[in-house]
Length: 103
Image 1: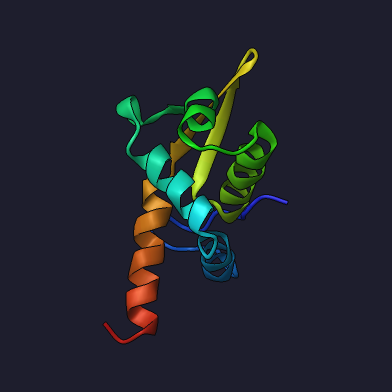
Image 2: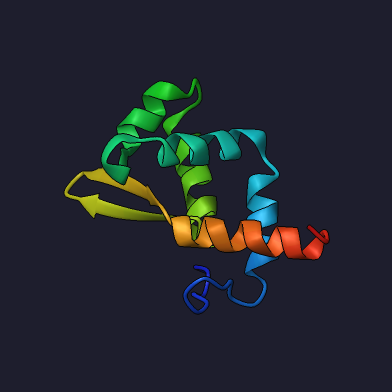
């Protein structure tokens, strides 16, 4: 199940909660940070595996959760997978968080 896309700059229904749950895991949050800080806005799966001292299966699971929350897009090129952060969704989540906490 992949996150439904909301309108530009807005989250889809239920997406705020999915994102909050996905980011509750500190390692997953760190994976998102690594993806957003990657050169050329794309982060190869292999780079994530080298950066984090966990199994490839664990990185794959974290990436899947970030994709399902709508925070990341992944693209396959043959045997290689690249991840790209969805900055529009990150900004929409931050705006919604501030709205909900009265900021």
